[in-house]
Length: 258
Image 1 (cartoon, rainbow, N blue to C red):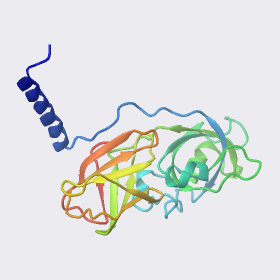
Image 2: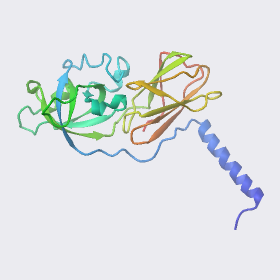
Image 3: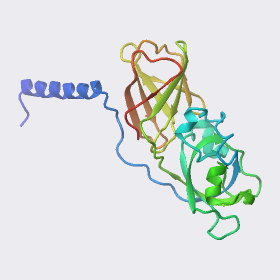
Image 4: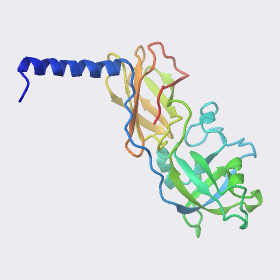
């Protein structure tokens, strides 16, 4: 039996108030479910940089440099163009398994988890699978330095991050640039939207390169909310992560992650 019109109206009004309250409290929208590990695939690995990871955070095709690079530590990799995917693969995590224990060039551990932070050259002729150019700290986990290049198997795995998603904004009121880092779950970012608390409606940002996203919409003077979509189509909304008095050149961290 349908409720009386007046009761139905009151129920709808109450639901609307509950939803509005959730938004006002800044509760981020996060899709349920967990990222599932991918299948094992063959490839090969080399290394670059120093034993402490030096020389691997000074720029790079993803744009994670200096302070931003600290989100990912020393266990990172430059990945082949296919995995880099014109920047869409930045931030993805891979478990890399080296030669069999006791085999030629085998290292102390069976595998290591790395984050894609740069682009590597494609595989050379005759090599199977994709190329990982690991930092030396990562390479030494699975192989000996003298091996130089080793056959590996790898799979896509979930990224485990500490704290919420981070947004670094640079540029000016006519050209805003936002770098997204510390993304959990699938780890990559394939779409980014921004919304202000007044005049700026949901606006889709464009990838400039790596994980740097841009818009020419004036975002100044507004509290900013960002919505991230990862490669598995999960979304996370960071409500009002940038306050009304946000400043260019600063990094702002959400309370939640994937």
